[in-house]
Length: 483
Image 1: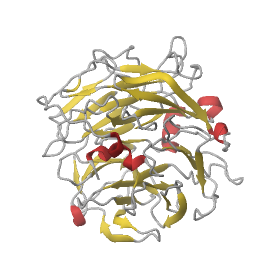
Image 2: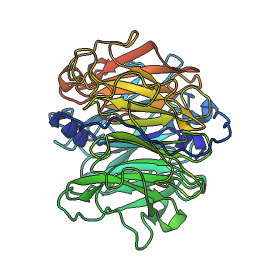
Image 3: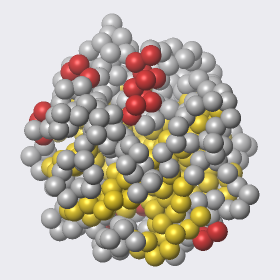
């Protein structure tokens, strides 16, 4: 798996948990100071070609990234909250509601059947599992396990069941052999002060279309454990050893959530290590990518119950360290707007090189941002990367009242509750997809802003909801998760 694959990873709260947090109201009290601990500047990196950057996101092999949007609360076949995902295929003109595929448990070829409260599409991941040159899509949701949809010249086809693993599928080259592997976590109950340790496995690639991996590997090395159920993940190579690592957001017990870094280790399984957000109370968004261009992926987390800051942990040959962390909020010089309590900075995090300068940029959701007199209308920010990590210079913010962005800001829209960076128009610059699950009475919608050599632009941006796709819309929470 190429460096470009790793530098556009992102993750956030699973849809039901995110909805519960947001609807409960409030994002905690924000501190107003920002501290940094910076590494020495790195040499300027070489930008990654757009064709390589799109491989993981391209289901039909046409050179354009394809956007996947979940609607986990949608009613399918009369089953409430059965859920579905919508795939909109990229093109020279970007994504369009007219060029799409809807996938649920009621879709022909997809194993299983629509089940109430399953929330199919709560999590999903992309990667070329069968090594045929087309990216595949693994969708989780409910106790029925996960499903693989296979890429082809005509887009996603078929469906192969993965029994027993219905949570947080994650792709990456975890053993360093150049093949895409699949890490799978079991659906486990979140409860109690002393939760059961997370369980799962790693399917070594390639994976056949019959659902048979080259080998079944242990999730963790002997004696290692993750203290509780895993609910979302992000992957990348933080120590530069050629093996992808996983940041797992998991329940630690006593109402506390946090991150854990799992270092790739070949066939022996992952090894636990420190990650920002460990024992934090909760971590809202996590993204992985090379922000300072030194060849090591970095980990960015948004955290609003313990510190109300964004944390950037810089990767190195030794992995991550608390001594190599930058901490910032909207008081960062050059960050437009004013930091306020409840903005929810980092409720979603995506990392990727938008402007093509070789440094990963950080997209942050601020769904609690007030716009003028509007409460919790929401916004998104793009914070440029540099050899010094994050400086704030050139930071951009967008919301529904920004000129060129479709729609209009309203109270409680919570624009920016989800995000993804991917090149849907194939011009070599990553575009930003941003979601609002609260739009139109919890139906939800997604916006796509174009990437350019100078960052993001609202010019030619588009927006669409489930109804535009001819999909179930009422209360669907369309855009709960984007990739």
